[in-house]
Image 1 (cartoon, helix red, strand yellow):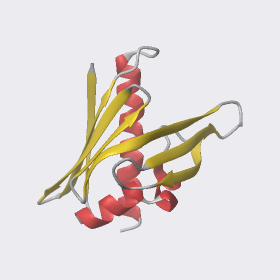
Image 2: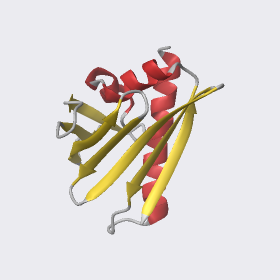
Image 3: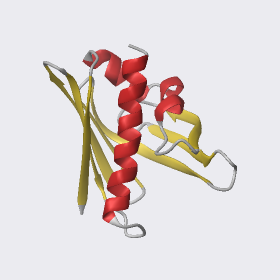
Image 4: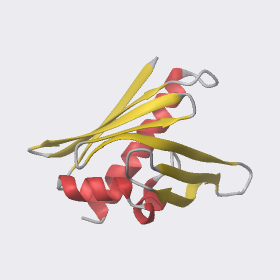
Length: 135
């Protein structure tokens, strides 16, 4: 099953793309709630390049690595990647009001679909706030 989340970012597409693909930006926005954070991030933005983000609860109680491999890159338009047995696509769609960022990913079976949707949407909302605040 595929899940899709999206937001509109009021910024030029080049700035949105850069914030989505730069480790220094990723560690600032990549969290679903205020009690989590990303402590480190690596990006090798090319087909077959790897990425990682270390996500941890701020109280140190839990953490995990989100990692995968880029499978398709169209600069300022599309990023596709695989993570484990799952895949995701991130579309950057320029509009008059900014850039619609749409993420479509394979659901996993451990957590309810709505919980997954809410978590990924919260991260995307943080991303939009980050870009707009630094634009």
